[in-house]
Length: 240
Image (cartoon, one colour):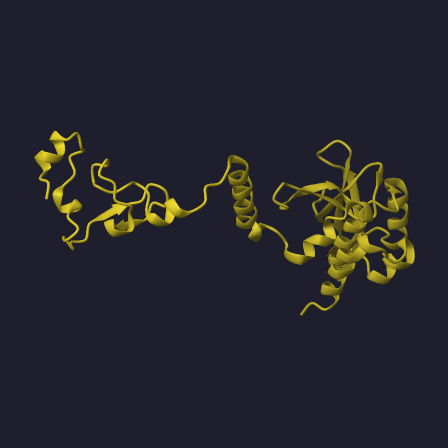
């Protein structure tokens, strides 16, 4: 068997003779340069041109098919898509992704407020929002004052904070159902266009109006775009 000096004289790399000795059963370990896993030398292809006598890639990585740049790009996209699964809303999210079905029955904010006043007299306070083009709604209640041996209700005064923020209403025409924006991983990012059914749903959950009042004044929600709205109503009705 060649010694180290003989290998160097013949132009070989300074490989330990113990590594090249096929009869040596000692276990040597090495980290694979591709999968970064530490494996014994027996799992690496032998090559005397390397200092350690084995290549930097294990047998498994060398035998794996190599991806093109385009294939590797799509592979990374699939991994990113799978990693964002917890940020999505599951199967319910599909009902929010049909924009054409949700952009229906447009209503101007003046008509919406008029209809809303028919079913919520003196129970809402409205003012300009902090952003241009928005109105904000507040839930208000009377102040009870004990005077002369009895409770007297004082009318609402904006200077006395007896209200609770509910939501905002966009000015102009709004669709019946809100339209959401999603990124390239199908993760919901924001509400790009607010629908007036979203406002009505918040009022129902805040006990400002009833579902029957909304159906009487605005009509029943129908069509494929109403699935998410009707599902939220069902969950609210059957809450524990």
